[in-house]
Image (cartoon, rainbow, N blue to C red):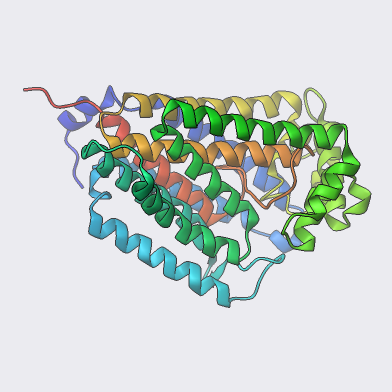
Length: 387
């Protein structure tokens, strides 16, 4: 697509450079962390090169989407065809061999496709499209509309839980709730928020003050034994087997970094390969150990900027689809960041959730950049034409 100088001049003022800076910062840190976590592990030899490749592809897709009007993606035929293909992939993945108890990947030449990432993307797009049409018809959220929204969301959610992938399932819940919050009236919103707040408070009270009751409650959950073990590890690592060992090593890595860190490529836990899956779920431990509290705070600030820019774009968008789409993105990224940092710090159970834009992973990175490309496309087209 050829872009004229006049086009660039018209849209440059609405381009969100804060969002781009946050993405570039996270990409640089991602490469440094993945390189440090894999360079001394023969099993992951060359993975940092793949990470560079996926980051380049991700940014290329990001700018390609920025140059094209995002409303092309809201075309019902294109959107629902993509949704249908994603549902098919989520069924196909169930026939492949599981990894760590979950059948989440389809092996392809050169990489592994994770359909659940696409499931999140098309769930957000499908719900945003339906909510936008609902608003155009000036109709509120009634039982009929809620049922249809639930059906759009539940398709990918059920198949993801059948893998089973509890982490991605919880992310699906997070984005669903975030999108509902935009359309709920004040009273149900307050009730829902209060219930969610109580659940979170009870989690931390049980974790810190009543561990025995917490463990009994975990045993009552309808989860597999390995999933329950991840909850147990948060209370007592000695009772959780390999999950307890993983959490112990992660906390040692982060704690030993102290204020300034041990220095890049100088972390004993990281270079000694003591933390399992460090390039994916536990990539934050590399930052905590080698860059310390200051490096960890820098990452959190970048995430804060990212979410703040998303919120700003959503609030200033003149398009209902754009607002609802970004609400889903905020719910998705916000939940992933909260859960991943929490499990790295031993405050939340490990659920296999990656850290957005930092963890190693092709499908995850590409999906995240697609979402950000759509968001930036919404940002530069949020002004109405004036005649």
